[in-house]
Length: 141
Figure (tube, rainbow, N blue to C red):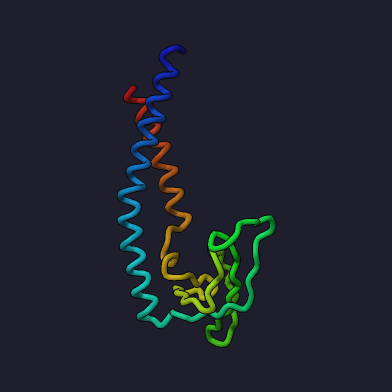
């Protein structure tokens, strides 16, 4: 039992460090190229729309003042005759218009900085990596 605790700590440390570097380096590089490709494809296919702010709200309980105040901008945009709404939290007063990009589903349109971002599949990959590295760490210690 006394030997088991250091093994678990060592395995957790190894798995945490390897997963962190795997996500921090490899994941970011993959995400960068994926985002560039998705943006280029959206622009090439004409999947770029301008959304106009129709309303904005302050979240309940937000008592900050000035530029640090959070708002939720509510935007509308139309694609092929169908109108969509997008809620977007922003620090400071929401912009009047924003440019949104989408792939095959206009309902999932997103601004430049968020488009082509990580999907739920990446989370599963790094969870599996964490477990594998944890088991590897147990085996090594």
